[in-house]
Length: 121
Image (cartoon, rainbow, N blue to C red; front, side):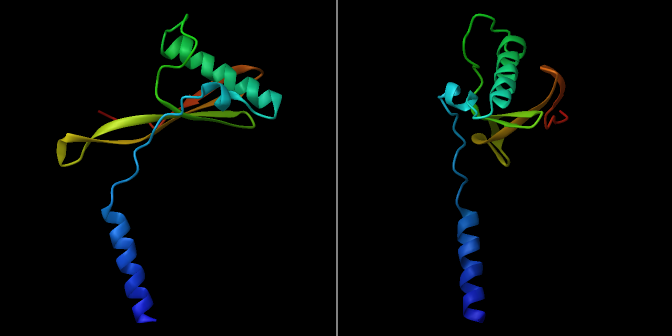
């Protein structure tokens, strides 16, 4: 039993020593906008177009420019997931990627609320 626990601890330590796999955007926005539930597909499109037209002020661009990873819809909530790049703590010459989430609540076909993991500067 001690040998198994020691081996497991060694594996966990080795895994922690490796870098996280970089987050990459999904280039197929149309596939991400699809949903088998027509209402959820409509909610996704509403949020996607809002992001593109308002946040990016790209009225004539057909796609969100930000590095989009996923669009998730559940009930009245739609979440957009983006790639974010930050300086590596302790070594600002290096960068790492992570995810950033923006969540919207849809009421009667309109965006009623927006949340994100805003940070203080």
